[in-house]
Length: 615
Image 1 (cartoon, rainbow, N blue to C red):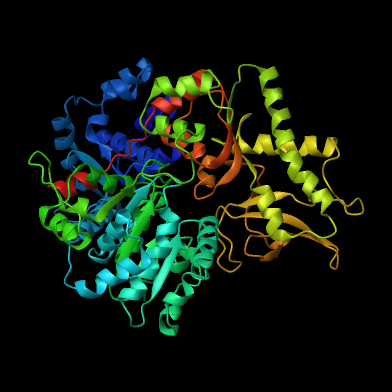
Image 2 (cartoon, rainbow, N blue to C red):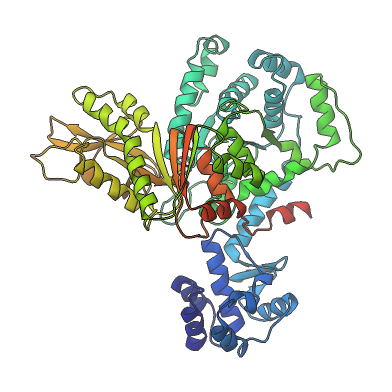
């Protein structure tokens, strides 16, 4: 065992945690299983749900490491996928799912049992997700549709009808396609359809996304056009605010379990989750199992955005079924109610899951000629020649691309980053005696630096430290000389760990303020909760944050900084996510070869959800 693990460790293909897991789950007489488990753990660390057995190709695993290849081929004599599958199934730790073992082989893929079971639970819920119009009264639904939606809003009417005739509905679309606005209208639609007490909850994966959604709901339901449409009972059904999924389901941050299940379901009639593309396999399982059989679930997100960090890309897997056509029965029902024509194409392949998925196409944030919109669309659909034309020929004045090749270019970048933040720092100086905190957050959101990595010359830590040093040197920071501290007025931070007691969540951004009465610095967050610095959960400085942390947020202008070496974290989805965070202007700092290689690299997370739903 030690010799086998030593070979793998010295090869530097696997991390110590992969080998420790293999060491615990196998023994010296199982060299094939040792390699398979180590590789499976590596794949799960990278967000995959399972390990395709075809990946267990020694020549590819030990590519450019001939010494280690020779050592391992002397131990393992397997060549084909069939040989590997047969050998792994000969060990007592592995079976095909007929009974519980630590590892499962299904469709020529190796799973840990927990992942295989979670996948099955999700599939079970969607297999049952069939069109059902027995719960609604058509005669009462049509007047409600016409009350809430304009005559020409056929798309929004279709979404409303889809949501009320399916237990689970999926709405996907790029930023700016109206996902947030449709949430408010769907809530109003359900409230009007179910006149009794109807419990509605709205949730998001992150605190900042829930803050933004809360603000949107408040504006909608307090508008003079909406208030007269609701009686007092119906007004009581309006959700007061959006919350994080972890907070709603009371998920334990240490073991990721919840108190809710089939026997103790969440007390809710309708659950709407925004930014659902960020939900991993395990969290999706918890959500589905926490709801009663008659609760509605609506998932909204963008299936082209970054996948979750943890294993699984459930939202993208489910959106695969957009390629099919709706069933004839559902299409006829829709066309009858909406009075639209339905043309049946014999060549189209119908599938029931298409009925519960809707893709929003029209973008209301960007003009069709917008450079940001054109770049995002080009990245989305792999239009390499258009991407290069936009970036290399400076086609749009709101997209500035800088090719970083040397230290001179790097220093030029730092200088530009400082300039971009000067407006924020000047705003602080100008309003030091009477700071409006809402305006302060709006000022901070006018510009954000996004990095791919945390460490290294192009990572958030180095960039943040460098900027703070320059701000101090240029006397741009307001600090109090009487108090020797690293803290200063306006210093932005980002929370790294949930803290339910303080109502703080991973990704929340706070700003340092001075409490003159207490003579100390404190941190204020968007919901006006003020926290003493000593009570803060783990945090980082937030002039620069990672693209992952930026999901669910939008900024007026952004700078995207890519590293000088390629990383497995770089991919098309990451670039697309970063580009669509900005509303106005985009600065990109990256070596040419890194940027275009990243755009060509697609996320592929191995799972069998699609396969299981098709068989």
